[in-house]
Image 1: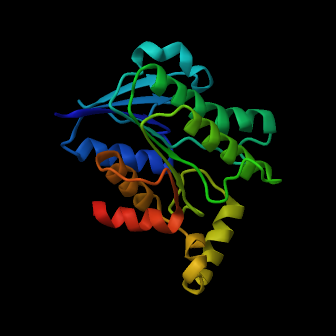
Image 2 (image 1 turned 180 degrees about the vertical axis):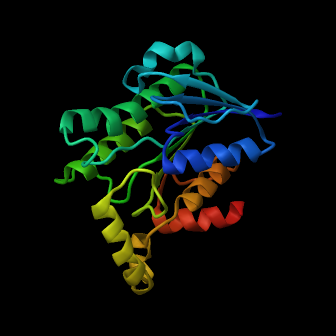
Length: 221
C-alpha cells in the first residue's frame, strides 16, 4: 500500500534531495512538508505547510504519516545565539519525536552529526547528543539517527569556512582509511539513499555513523 511521508527541512540541501527522490518513488503516494518557508515545488504528491517549526505541537492534527524524516539543522554562522541554536537543533527533532509518539507514527529517521555526545564539552556535539538521547527516549519503534561527517555538495547560501574545509578534505579523504574512514566527506545524495532504504527495510542499529551510512546507501542504489 502506498505510504505517506513527512519531511522536516525540505528547503535544505539534504531535505531537498530527499523530497525529489520520494516524489519519484512509487512506494510513496503523499509527502507532507513542514517548513518555515516555501520550497517552490508544486506536485500532486506534495502537501506543504508553512509553519513556525519551534511550535510544531500546534499542528498535531496535520502530523499524520507512516514515516517521518527530519533533516533540520543550523550552523553557528547562521544562528550565533546559542539559545536559539539549541531550540532548532535539539528542540525541533525532539518535538517531532514527541508528535510521532503521540500520533503512533512508527518510523522516524533523523540526520544528526558525527561526534554527537550528550557529555561533550563542545556545544555543537553536546546539543546533537542530547537530541539523540531524548529522541530515543520517545521509544518510536523504528528510529534511526544518522551521523554523517562533513556533508559535501553545493549549498545556496555561502559558507566560506565550510567551503575551505571541503576543499581541504578532498585532499585528505584518500588518507582516511580503516578506523578513520568515518571522517571522510559524505555527499547528501548518499545520506538520502540510506534514509530511504532504512525506512523501507529492517535494520538493527539505531545510531549509524558516516561510513556505515555509505554502506547502507549502496543497498538502495
